Length: 120
Picture 1: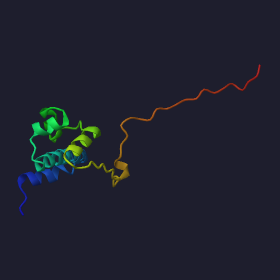
Picture 2: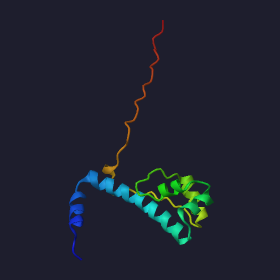
Picture 3: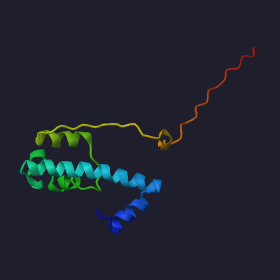
Picture 4: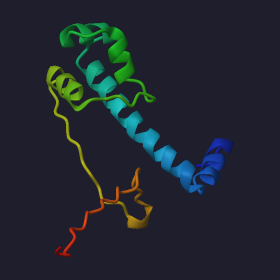
């Protein structure tokens, strides 16, 4: 199979660690969106019909099925899964290179007061 210009461009961009991380993160949101849309379609439901079953809006279902949406709550995913006769599984996988792990904030330094041991 021949690589397209886009394939070649993407391969070059993936050499940049920052781009690769953003690309992988986007892929995770895309996976969730595609799974929800596929389950809904397999159930023969429109977004509006699913929204009615979940007592929410069609716009909310559209957001859930959008690859750019990152506001999925576990409780909403469970509600969707229940209505669509599925289950939610969250898997944490170890990072291949632990040095890639980053902490968002520095740890606070806690000081302790020393008691004076001098007696008057």
